[in-house]
Image (cartoon, rainbow, N blue to C red):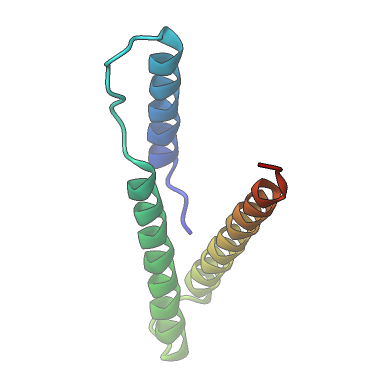
Length: 104
C-alpha cells in the first residue's frame, strides 16, 4: 500500500480532533470524521489499488515497456501492503481472542 503523507496527516488530524471533542466533554456534539466502516473501506480500496498497480507494472516490465526500478518499486509496495494487512488482521484476531477469554 502506497502511503500518502498527506492522507496520513489528515488521518492524524481527524484523530486529534475526535480526541479533543471527546475530551472536551461536550454532550450532544457529534464527532465530525469518517466512520470506522469508511476507514476500512478506504484502506481496502487502497490495498486493491496498490495490487493492481503492481500487477500493471509487472506486465509492463515483462513486455519491456517499463523500467525495472519502477517494477521493483511497485511490487515492493504491494508486498509491504500485504504485510501490513496481515499484521492488522493478526492484531484484530488476537484482540478478539482476548475478549472471548474474558469472564462474563
